[in-house]
Image (tube, rainbow, N blue to C red; front, side, top):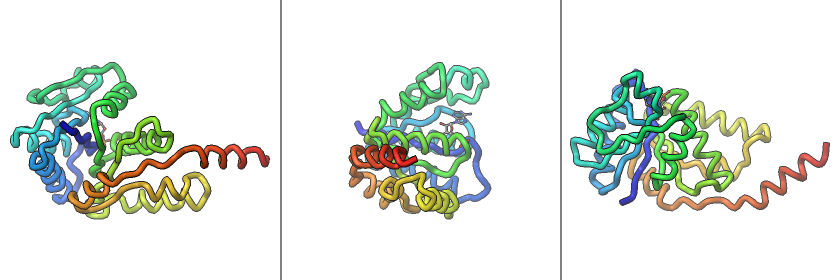
Amino acid sequence: MARICVFCGSSMGTRNEYKTAAHELANYIAAHDLGLVYGGADVGLMKVLADTALEKGVEVIGIMPKRLIEKEVAHNNLTNMIVVETMAERKDKMVDMSDGFVALPGGFGTFDELSEILTFNQLRISDKPLGILNIAGYFDELLKFFNHAVGEGFVRKEHKENVIVSHKIPDLMRQMNRYQPLTIGKWIEDIKNESNHL
Ligand code: AMP
């Protein structure tokens, strides 16, 4: 079974649209017979997502570091909870167990997870699509910053263009299904050349 790993806020956010999106994404996952992988918490949008998916009979796998379990934010009714030692180990496990990633609105935890997948894809450590669900324009400023980073020569244009964004779930999923990883040979050569001109 294909599984989607979802990154999203451990908070609810201020707008109702965020909660609605977590709900709708869980419904989409159920309707398409997909499995769900997520951070395993019982708080914020993560809880909305997991509870809706469980209600619809989706297989829900949580992956959580031991330290967070001890803080008692773990969801107790998941199909499976995988306990790991560190945050790094958790992300590796999320990558191993999933076929694609969706980022919903969230905070630093969500930014960390989405940057990790973008970096993994850039380096071809993994080749699994990441889609940013841009609800209520939440990610607009971040996407603007990505453009700034391209302009300033720190992100390659093709890597920025390979980032999948939509405010509609079916459109996001369609784009993710068409995802084509970029080859790494050329840009590694470019970076080396650039560095040789010091
Ligand atoms: P944030 O966006 O900062 O609220 O963090 C949420 C993201 O980081 C989720 O996708 C989780 O995988 C991870 N995370 C952060 N806080 C928690 C928590 N209390 N329990 C489980 N995962 C968390």
